Length: 311
Image (cartoon, rainbow, N blue to C red; front, side, top):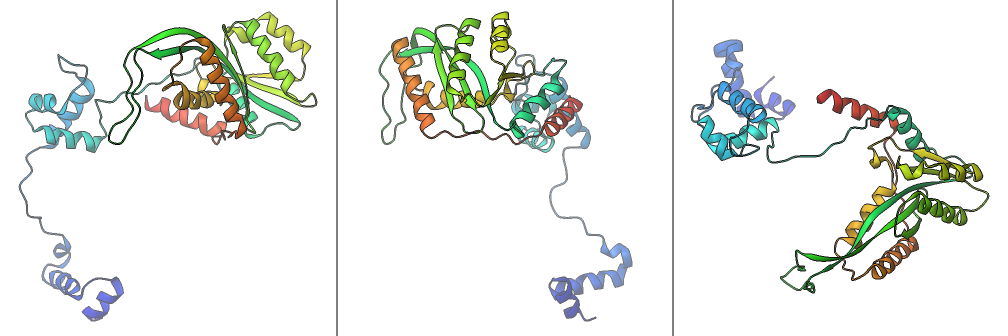
């Protein structure tokens, strides 16, 4: 084939075909090996790279908990930019930390399958509610009035505040609709939890079974609650594993409440806080949005298995 035909077939310039054909004719297969590129010779050896990685992972400076690029560069005898490139290549970020908590529940697998199963395949003629308490919500007021946002300036608030008491919020999130049944109480004992169960019972139609997802708090397992369940056979409890509140969808709703209302609001007393919470819940229920669970139990357990293998 001609150089032009080959170039059209493989999608390159005819000059490229001519160059490599000529190199092959002159040196055969050795001619197909690319020549060294121009540039400065390498100054950091593989041993230097290994030393930086090992020191980052296994040592710490005497005056800090983790290395900075400048500190490690001074210790290793290379530039700070070189340390940064090595860290980037190996995915090392000494300045970052993350939290974790592994459940010690001996029934972890069974509880995950139970809770996720009730989310992804809810029973017919039943309502699934995620129930929990957001305890000790503080009525906080800033020591000085906040300065509102204006062009060129963000909203400003004082760093300090005054406390005016706390209140507890009980919430039950309907998994299918996103509707929330909520109640505020001064405490979160078993007696308050039983009263909240009475409120749920009054708000759910009598012809529906009620499946409640909740955590392992002691107030949820007292003899009084057990007697209440015996008197209300349409209720079934599904407990999340210990230290696994991420399985309870109502926690996602509490996060919405925190970021959209509590973080930037101010209240001078418990009465104002209670009224504000009731208004926010009412506004939510005017256009409720359900939180859809996507991960299957097998996907969760496989992900946990991979994480445990890594650590």
